[in-house]
Length: 211
Image 1: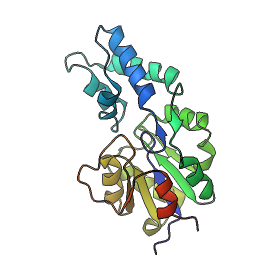
Image 2: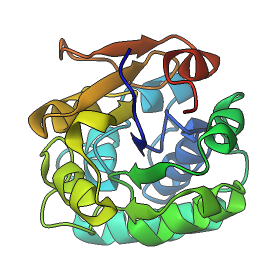
Image 3: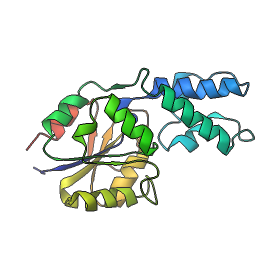
Image 4: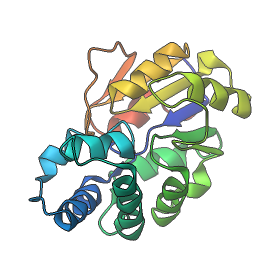
């Protein structure tokens, strides 16, 4: 049986259900520029590649511009903790592995990610947080995963990337570590190979019991 001591997590759709607050902020922005609101499920399938791509997917191409992205990030900073909650079972996994190497690698901006982890009461579990601007590249590039392993002093063969999106799987695969697809999240595996599949957060403790 494989033994792991390093767990790298995606944030949105993996640790926490953020889609309602993202929907609120997309629709606040759309309302400010005279557009009709979008449904939650329409937003859900557009999440996973960072704020810029989310907004580009939620606005007509001819309307997207940098100042709207800046405005969206302001709105999201005001509303990201309104309804976002940890997925049931995630706190149990983190507590069970609290003495191991835990990190978050997300395409969400660093400062918003740090505030959200603190609000959710789990920031103290993570030795490392990489946001969208923390490295020169972002997922699906393996660069952030490789840099996280380096900073954690982690052995690649004892590390696993846990996420709900093919960008997480591609980043982990590219870095040469094991990957776990989280089927409860927003994304899809995009046909990317993965070593483990968790249908619910409770499956993680079965797949990865504490040492």
